[in-house]
Length: 436
Image 1 (cartoon, rainbow, N blue to C red):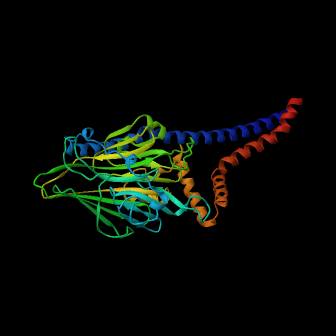
Image 2 (cartoon, one colour):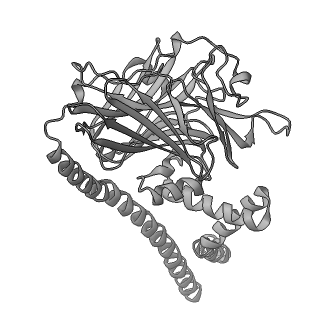
Image 3 (cartoon, rainbow, N blue to C red):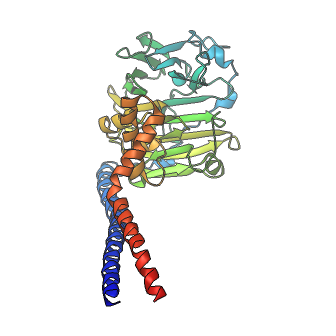
């Protein structure tokens, strides 16, 4: 009997040690994750805010006299235009239906569409590698839609003066003239021009890379005898909700941006229909609309101070994001130039990461909704993509990811199995003790 008790004590001690090791291992993992989350929330974010605040302070010290709140922000005016057939507008014909305004064709490996000379708007983009359905004969995905269509969705850049300015400036209805280039394609930019006949000549140069990024270079030449103060702006306007809008809580669709020290800012369409959101004294960042698979984003110059805004009009039927940049002085006989960007395309993670690095766009990959556990979901996504490149099948890739996760957690699982095995060995001895 004494031997049995000794054996029981030995087994219990071993079992307790195994269970304690397992508990300590799980506790260590949990505490490590907690420390990382706390550091990111309290330390990492504050350091980022300090760095960004320093940048803003430096910028504001150069622009103390500028108050963007008194500058009239641009508004889209899609209601006043005659509607046209979208199929006609997307045929890359040389004129807008119902008007005599020409369009500049866009043609790359991934995109096709056109730019309207009415307002020099980027308002016709189709994705060559994506279709509405899996049917090979279905239509290409139409992302941006002509200004004069039933549900326009477009990007527009320009200049505004202050509330007292009488300077004639280009607007949505300005007819621009093509002065160089023909078809917009990679390494083949186009340049548009408009003369206000009061001494100011405005030009816009559009260029495009081999993916989804447009570069818009705006120039103002002042041939008058007096200087001018102008404010650059850019906007995206869309009428109606996306055709594939799901409104499902696990996926964000709507307004999105990373706005300097404000960080990531999301908003639903319904929220902005009730109240405009404005972000003042911002440097760096980007803002736009994100859909389930696509996005359109405006990117201001990363070295100027600007005011960003999420707004709507028409009782919430038309949605707009825009920014208004700091004042640019154009001296008499002088010229000023400002460069901004428009992203309009598929949310391909590799391309988003490429733009984030190349143009120093903070958190540009957040156009993809990674959920609450970004630090886990994005690495797993890259593992899945890597396996897909090897196996050529997402089903097999998912199985492969599952196996890899099992391998990573095998030591923990093995300890649990050892503990359970020890408990099974103890069961006969425990029964004998109970019987005695």
